[in-house]
Image (cartoon, rainbow, N blue to C red; front, side, top):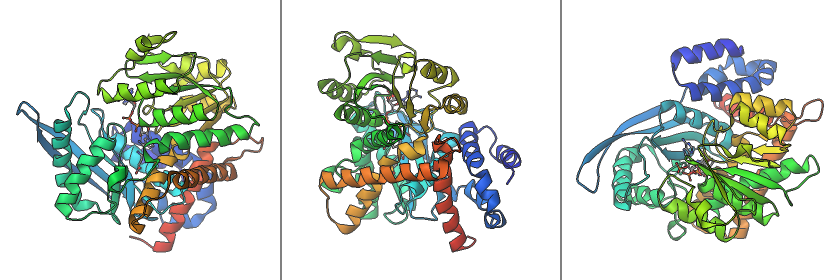
Length: 445
Ligand code: NDP
Ligand code: 2IT
């Protein structure tokens, strides 16, 4: 394999898809050596087959707002690879959604799902629809129109969508209702379902919990733990909320959260009723964290900036892709940050990762550290198949075990001669090997 040649080909074929190119390049660089040491991969053209999605469905989503005005959005589902199990991955509703973003997410999902050890292939979908500021009925009409097209290609053993940015419990409810009506079946076709109709306990907080379990394992490698540590978190969504709760539970102090408007710095720690308030803030359907600063004393709101300038021991970027750049990484290093654990997908730019790794800051990529979300989706699928519900302790202990196992695999494949663990390399190699070997076993298709 020659990474430059492959990247040139890919860029020619998918011009302008910069996020997708970024995600592929990282994987290729990580696996280059192991790929070239195993000529069976090259002769089966595994990587050329992996970077081309199995299929992409792009469709029109017409819907009517509360004033009777018609809108047209674009919907997508990218079924990337199903060598190890049914296609699995979230749906993102955000105005920035385009083919490049969904291809990067779908590609990452192949390796993330492989790392979970559960039988799930990689997929992603979504729409450029913006749920912010829409009424519940508008969101419902949109979800119904979206599912009208999507239901043909999904199914409990075919493709199982879930949430992501802009798609939470409410959206999954409307999507599931529409699917059930169209397909005339009640199956585990979506995950993140409500607890009364097939959902799993712990799924809403699973991604954030998993991120913190993973950070805990990373810290152990340098004989540290979360107790008394200052933790900077970005975002105030699903992932950020679960992470804040678990950090607090394990004795750490969350000192920031952020939104597209800026960040809040709360030196006293964001815990208890303040986490409840964070959830209320989200439920308002507005795009801002600023009100938090008025609600509680001693809190500073900093407009238009990222939280990474606040001195912290641990940073958990939990908002969106490329939100932590080189300058942010330099600031974290300068302030003595020990560990950066990605909660979002690809929140650190390649230049930021380089700075962190050069300075031997512990760094883990989202595909390893945020895999707890999709892993718990896998557990939801298992419960649906067996038609039972596990107790929350059971789900939590399985999640914890899965995160520890992913960490072990990263250490196994990523430990460098000087003892520093390159989690990017470790995660990519471990995730890749399982999928590549499965593709070899199953022949050319
Ligand atoms: P939510 O919609 O719950 O929250 C997303 C957060 O990021 C919100 O605070 C949102 O603010 C902010 N945000 C979104 N887009 C932008 C942007 N362009 N610029 C700045 N801030 C932005 O999503 P999740 O918490 O579910 O997802 C967060 C990240 O975690 C994403 O990268 C997602 O792919 C990843 N992830 C999610 C999993 C899950 O199970 N939900 C699992 C694994 C990873 P606002 O809403 O106000 O725009
Ligand atoms: O990025 C992700 O892993 C998710 N949004 C969760 C996907 C899932 O199928 O639960």
